[in-house]
Length: 137
Length: 329
Image 1 (spheres, chains in turn purple, cyan):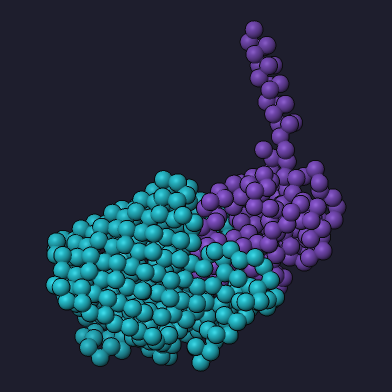
Image 2: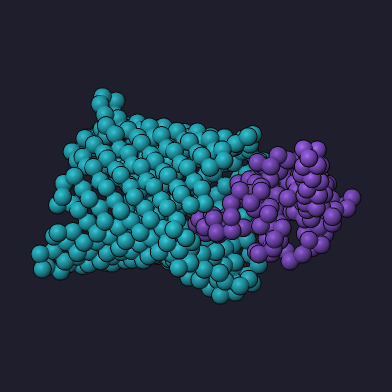
């Protein structure tokens, strides 16, 4: 009986892991390796220059589910808190990252623009971009 | 000159490329120039006085190009004030346009930034976002007005390091007269200050210290030193903010202490409750007080704030009710 329970629970855990979606923070190949704290600082516009290149963070659309996961995981702020953050930053002379409507647009932008950094589903990765960080949920 | 700049900014904003959003400003055509501003109206009631005020009306422009960024802000302060005291009405107008902030930044890399111009002194938390619409009460804590110069005109520099958390070091240097010195809580010609802050997860701790030379002719002490310790905890629902500091001259303490602790609770996105406790002992003005403040803020949209608060003072004649309406655009 005990063995059956262990096998049953292990099966559930394994299927959860296998079914979890994986996401990636991507950048142009010229971008150096970055910690999650630095990635967060780039998307909050605290870092604007990386090794002589202007950092260009790119968001997905305002209510995109991948953006929501990215903001909860990396930025550690929900949508409402970020709205108030960017209102305050307007007073300090800073703009939120530009938004793009699709993961393909983000990937194309990141491939072509030095200093660009974005995030997509890991299923859509290809060799044209550099992966800075991966997470799954 | 400043009026011409305002007209120029207004005309440019008419040619904006992108759709306007309240609280985000608007881009002037395709130029590296964003235009915005804010205003606030407030009302104060004490046992003796009712005061109505158009307090701040400000326009600002900012942008960035390559490693440079800039910000300019011009403001009418206390544009219209009407008081009713013991049945007597009095009103004043002020149409002087002050330069509130005017600076240029150069970002060397992800760690170092250099600033030149007039800017909010990088001291504590409150002084970084001092405008009505962005703070959570109509009033400002006394500790943010009496300990240090709110503005610095000169050079500023910051160093940021990212490890497990964020370590930031600020340096402020002024060795010249202020731009628009009337628009500062101290008239100064020297300010040398530092700040060290560490932020990790939801917590931030900050220490500031410095020296400034006070030019006010009535000032008893002109060489003043300050020290301020600030702490902040912020989550989705709560914020706890506290600052405690002291000011001294070469001989004696000019402000023994000034402190506040403020708790904020977000009932939801629009409704926010605030409680603040303040205490200070200012020897220069020979005033001291303990204050308990209950506040409530309604934000139909984040850039619009409708705020009310009631202050209980240790001297009950100073108890007061404040109400304000402010917008960031």
